[in-house]
Length: 353
Image: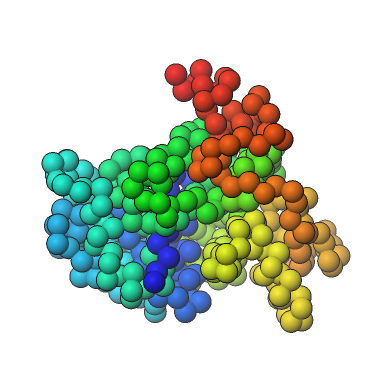
């Protein structure tokens, strides 16, 4: 049975499509049968896979508007083994209007994936940058939400609301849905704003366990690969972005064992060390928070490939607050993280009003 993961954030430009595209390609490289679903009318995922959206005769639009549709009929193979996709088209922007009067409109995508769940190991849904009926369909069909989050203060705005919506879907329609990972993207370690944004996220114990160790830094190779319609893991496997998404892939696979996102890197690196493997998945340049990691081998200045091993997990043991609802004693209502992730408190409430 497939793991269905929706890549979701209502803010645009945070790396949703890049993450869906390259995580999917990385999973396929690891032998996992993977289906990508482009649920964004802009069709960037479709274009990023080398497809011409305007030339499509069928797309996810027909999938959602036909009550008897089967996603397998719309899945097309890509140039890469184990990787298929359901393409998008600008017509998808009108699907919500057509779906307005349909019975069970929020479950259209979920029902169409019945056969696809049996064929694939992973189904990744690339969502549009808004909370709409299309994203509701994605959350109803998925069991997990992966949130790409740019290391910038604006990207933090509305994060609490996003978790509230996930909680509403969890309580009302899809009991399996939960936020299982937050991926920090576009990180620039040369700037204080990136470092402070990451620190704000990690200061909240309720979110700490959902943050992946892998951090995707800014890399021009991503844009170059998308221009050519090739996943960066194939375009330039040695570049930082490609190695970061391969490392993220390993973390996602490790979660199959019930491991929390923040603990995956530790277990992977421990196995690599025990087996005597020289090349490590997690190297110094893939990690933006070295304070959480213990160095097992000396890393010389400028050495971006030294092995790093995470320490034993700390005392943060609470899940995403919006899915649980309780506030940890260590997270004061007035803390920056609390104001960002929980806009119902203090100054954040005034901002949203």
